Image: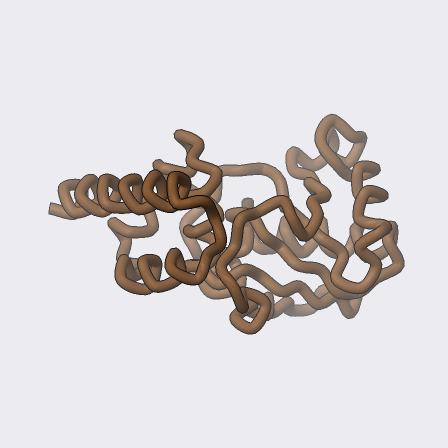
Amino acid sequence: MKKSEVEHVLRAAAAIVGDNEFIIIGSQSLHGKYPDLADEILKSQEVDLLSKNKMDKTDFLNVIGMDSTFHETFGYYADPVDAHTATLPKHYRNRLVHLKQEGSGVSVKAYCLEPHDLVVAKLAAGRDKDHVFIRALLARKLINAETIRLRLRETRVSSEKMASMTTLLAILIRQAEGEAQ
């Protein structure tokens, strides 16, 4: 998704929920730190979105969700999530990155996961598409392996889950290093 498409979803979301502040927790949150990121990294067509001030109304975003008229018309959509959708390190809210918007005409603020916090969430999810995503970020040096390791230490998961996430990170680092050469 392009940043302009994310902004379109945010404007629509603001009108639906009646909130002008949102948190983006999925891969589209990279637009906060890297607004000009290449499209091949941001392949997903959804914006994982949480209303910041009206969390109880986030589900209303299904009106512009998957298979909605909005989705069929534009090819992208909102994926309403809640505060427990992603496994995130402690204090991630202190590191949220403001998504700077230009000329939208509507005052909507979006806060994006800091990329290393996003990678922790992707490691926890552990899907194949997340592996590809993390490898691409590592290969392009958009994230730092040591910072991810530090964030993992701040993440509350079972010891088994932590071992799995740590092992997966090590594998992805090796693969990314091989791709970079």
